[in-house]
Image (tube, rainbow, N blue to C red; front, side, top):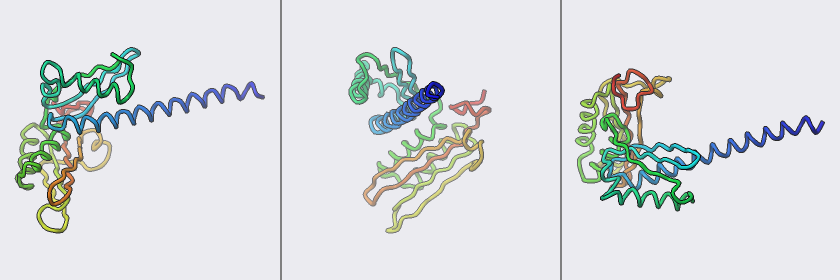
Length: 214
């Protein structure tokens, strides 16, 4: 009887280890993404991709200003590599960082969220800043977009302002395939504002991340 239970116990151990690795990978990605959001906000950070091989871990940073991510003679990217190596206890020379330029900045919800965030931090009026972002997104070839700003805008009470243009899908699998969305928070003198940007890509295939037509 014990001989029959042994393989089942071994299989259970394998499932647990796979589950732990899956959770650990998710935590690593989330922490890495949060770190880059703080460090590379001004450089137009738009996302990160992690590729793991037996010998090295490749981390690809997507940003609108790749030259600022690299720094003068690659100094900034080396500093980021050193910080990540020490924070996550990677062996020496086992992590490589690369900077990839976002081809269509107007179709990246993260990039437009950061753009709107810095416009508000620089004192631009909410309505003017949002309409500027909407116009740029639609001129970049999006089918539709939606910008929502919530918080204490001018009055004492908090409220939400929604700006929309074009078409927008709100439910179903197409919403997952074709809608790119991002959320950011900006701390102003009157309080914290929440910013949400949704972009419907004019993509012929759901797997096209740039929204460009084939």
